[in-house]
Image (tube, rainbow, N blue to C red; front, side, top):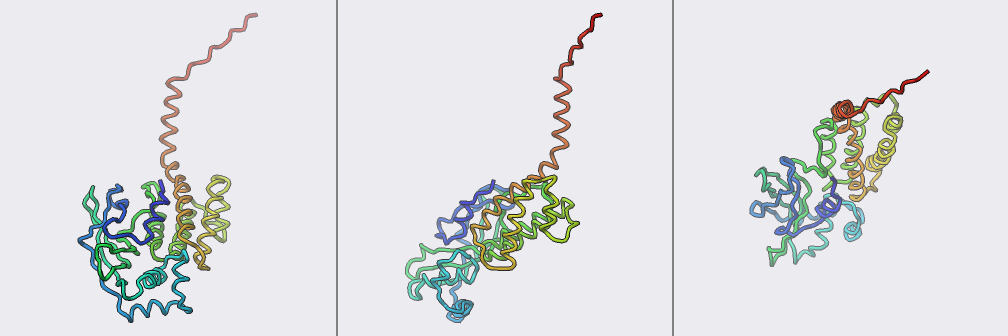
Length: 271
């Protein structure tokens, strides 16, 4: 099941030596841990710092740091503001996560906040995992086209909320396609066409469509909006699990019925 609290926590700065364990994309266990020995960082040059700051017209870095958007440049603004130039080294990093169960590796990149006088309290914010981490378990019963869009959305979540929301919208489009609801003119109408067969799921998907629209045409969705959307979408995807398993369940249920059903006694009608 989707763990909103875990991923809301992962999206923040963390001390390198106490980074939380994550789900392994290979064996699905919660044993993916940061290999601190693989951590490598390079300090951002003054030119690079200026390049990040120039992304913002008003240069009010603290205003951006207080907002919930987590794009790479806005996070850089947060690190730069907290660093104060003399106390910390705003840096980019590369590191590997290793699974304690299957021994597979996942690479990561992002921003690091490294004190000049005490490297034992280094902090990092991962911006990208390779391969992407599933923010909720992706089932084999879900069509590959949907899972691929979701994985892309998951990986953008840590660096660009708008791109993540756009990919979520594409996953909704692929869901309609896989279920055969593609005859209407737009996504709204395709989802509405589902309502006869899946009324509850159609209503939920309309909410996700609005989130995707906001991500595509504006810039006002937050990490929290996306996390709530993933919580909804995970349950919607149960459509495919049920479609996969229902024929078998129907067969088993009929067998049980035939085995234990007692014949009704017929009443004899006396003249």
